[in-house]
Amino acid sequence: MKKLLILLVVLLTAVTVFAGGAKETVNEKVLRVGVSDNPRFLDPTANSDNVMGRVLKNIHETFIELAADGTIIPRLAESWNQIDDRTIEFTLRKDVVSHAGFPLDADDVMVSFGEGRTASPGDPGYDTLKQYTGLFEVEKIDKYTVKFTKAEPDALLLLRFTYDTTSIMCGDSFKARKSWEEWMVKPVGFGSYYVDEYRPDEYMVFKKFADYYGKEAPLDEIRYIVIPEMAPRIMGLLSDDYDIITEVSPDQFSTIENRKGFAVSGGPINNVRLIIYDEVASPVLKDARVRLALNYSIDRELINNTIFKGLSEIPNGVQMKNFGEMYIGEYKAVGFNPEKAKQLLKDAGYNGEEISYRYMVDYYTGEVATAQILQQMWSDVGLNVKLELKENWDQIETDEAAEGRGIINWSATAIFADPLTQIARLYGPAGFFQVHNMWNNDDINAQFEILSGTDPVARRKAAKRMLEISEDEDPPGTYLYLLPQFYGRSEKVTWEPSGSHFMDFRAGAVELSD
Image (cartoon, rainbow, N blue to C red; front, side):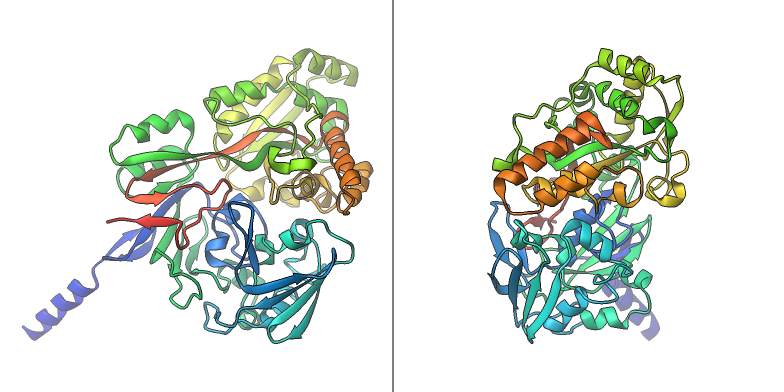
């Protein structure tokens, strides 16, 4: 009898349910997010893609952060002093501990930007840091003060430190890990949640960090559960398996909104959806006229109206309207001109050679439908494009997969309101396509150097020239539309999208009712 009572007590106090492979304790606030994909890595310098941007700020912290209204707010830094266009000092907070319990100090910064992580070309985080924020010389002034210096003046110097790649890692934990592969799937940082479980292609679990220095996280646990197909995601939302789902296409809005207790939110974000050409792996694409013909064959407004019900927006090339003085309004990006496309193909001597187009199942909202419409538009002008559905990014973007690659999907986030962090980062000398030998252009690289300077007139002229080269002369790809992000959610979740990839579940950003 005594054993039976003990067993009953254990069962009553440890009741759990399972969803996405993880345990949920009764009365905990557990947010279940159904996603099309999860990041392959969780260290901010391991890579930088859309699904990483979705989660990183929930687990990692930068010195400072760019608020929604454009102001810069403190995070791990209590103060900062920009000495000139090359140099900036940060003074760290003294009340911060990592997820492993180690107090934050300047040594963590030195490890984060040091040898073995980001400092040298052989370090695993070097290329990502170089591409997204540039490289810095880092000096420890005292226990809580560090100084960063760039080799050249940088018009965006302060803003660089608001981006994820400059997040600070726990130095003690980093040095204790046996390998980069072990570290990058379960890194130790200073954010309001920590990584509890990570299973590639299945799910990952973040848990509330009880010793976070700031306001307490509103959720005990966040589960990101991978469901690649949209229909099962929607079914799971409506059957209460998930509280929020991502990448909902407009043709499915009514399925969600017609059910009591559910809603859809979202819209276009600060990201231009693109297609990219590999002119090295696909011989037919070596001729710029064929690439230009691909560009002129696209009716972008038709795609927006057909797939997104007109809810997205067609940008003026790879740039955003919020660039202020750096927005090149007088530039007119290539539009829909099928007759010009046919003439270009005739001039190029194109004879129907096959061009592969590799894509995935809606990694991007509406990706499959977009690929199918594009294939038809290209066929209408005589282009022979073969669709190749792939299971993951390794089958699309890696150097090992390059053979036969022609067209792939991509997107370009405007990290800050400046072309240096969008078109220049995308197509410049440190961008993915030049680094991986898919395309290069010396004039683009020369303009990149000018745009990286501080003369506003010269910078604007360089930005315009980069648009002209990349769309009108020697295109490495082309713009399609502003990437829309639509979410389905249960109305027990009070949450609104951020206007970027980031799904903010920190204090003040989300509430979950019973």
